[in-house]
Amino acid sequence: MAQIIKTGTSQRHNLQKYLTSTMVQATHDDLEQLINDELQTNVALEIVDPSEAEYNGSERDDSGVFDGDEEEKTNEQETLSPTDEGDTSITDQERGDAVAFDNDDDEPVNTSSNLDPDEEDFNPIDNVTNPDTFRDDLKKQIEVLDISNEEHYLACYIVDCLDENGYLRRPLAELVDDLEMTQHYETTVEDLEAVLVDIIQQELEPSGIGARDLRECMLLQLGERKGHAAQLAYKIVNQKFDDLSNKRYDRIELDLNILTHAELVDALHVIRRLNPKPGNMQPFSAKTDEVKTQQIRPDFIVRNEDGQLVVSLNDDNYTQVRISADQERLFDELQESIEDKTADSGAEKKDAPNMKQEVIAKKREGIKFLRENIHNARVFIAALEQRRNTLIDVMQTIVDMQRAYFFTGQVETLKPMTQKDVADRCNYDISTISRVSNSKYVDTEFGIVRIKDLFTNAVADSNQAAVMEALKNIIDNEDKRHPLTDEALAEELGKQGNKIERRTVSKYRELLGYQVARLRKEV
Image (cartoon, rainbow, N blue to C red; front, side, top):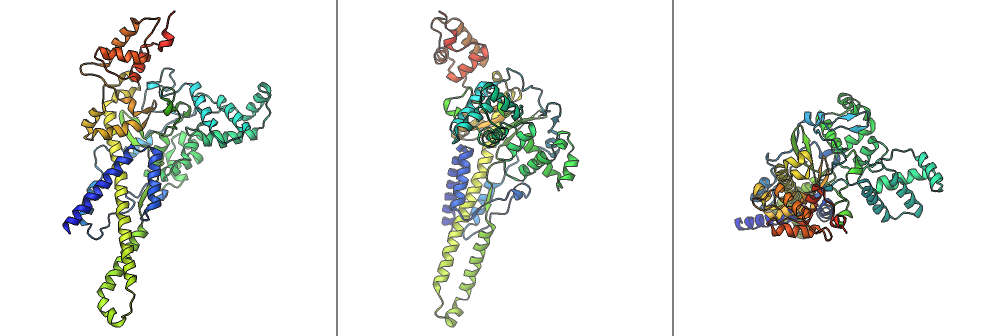
């Protein structure tokens, strides 16, 4: 029996390790697909109702012991138990006080940062696109939609009318007049409204694009989120926006009959995560063609909370699952039924010799089936929790190592950091760091950044200033009739002992104020 338990525990740990590894690398959509697939195949797994997901702590005790699982239960509880280290939660007061709005410009004010996001040069790692790229990307999304030629034309026209923050500030009636006067194109306010709402606001990314004011922008983003906190946040913005703007939280609690202050502050925390300027959210301008075609969903959120960098996982939209109480109850009933029949088997054989033994056999098959499904569900939930802990641990380590960047948003503040450095710091295998850095994005106060771009490969005894100085000397002394490409510049730096990637050379070149090779060419 001991050997069986040991073997079963080992298999469970191997399965959980495999699942966790897969989940860590998974993108937002990939993880959602994994969860949906498991829901389809495992009868013991069920979706957590959003109204129950936020404030009931652990949804239920899903660690029931089955035959031969006593040791497994103990080991699993150790796996599932969250640690206090790396806890990025903030207090109720911090979450409540952090939400501030300025009624003059209808934009949220970030009270925890002295940086002005409207500065023209506020563009770390090219993660905020220029207006032309921003509109071009929206038009590329429109191109692949199954819409009529008229809808395509009007959608592109509306995109051209969006301001730099992604808002449509002009009245639709004014656009109708402009189309008739300048384009000789006749349409109606109703047609424009339909294209704006059904296509621009509902089909294009990022969420909130095409809103006509801050309130509508926030409602569009909240409408896509799941969970009790997000639902309450939607109600607050929809019904009590003026009180929210003026921080009249007591009135909001009273008017909306919010039972606990914790519910309110969690909703405010969701609101503060929203992006008030969706036009500045897309990081496509300096990325590869592959990334440009993707719709970015950041996996992490990093915010400056009164001088403390707070890391959180952007998992509001994930489907939450738990072990079905009904299936556990059925398992217990079948167990009790089998035990009763076994205890009375002698008497039953005397009194009812023709008793159908196949009934007992079928019940035993049902018990085995449910045991396996509940066991697999427990492993799946444990892997989800382990994924969450791993991602938070790795991201927290990266933030700690690149604190200057997350406070300033300036690329020149990035310190030399490799995947091995992070792995050594947070005690994970380097392959885990690679899975996180290669496929994840972080939402900062300066825009969305690819985590991979936070790593710099600098050789020993070589700092960023020295590399940039070496790069400057190479460009200043190059043959202006045949200027060096970024790849050639990287090769020249490598010859000097500064082995850095081409993309890093591009960043340094831009920081130094040099144009690309073809624009530096002199006849």
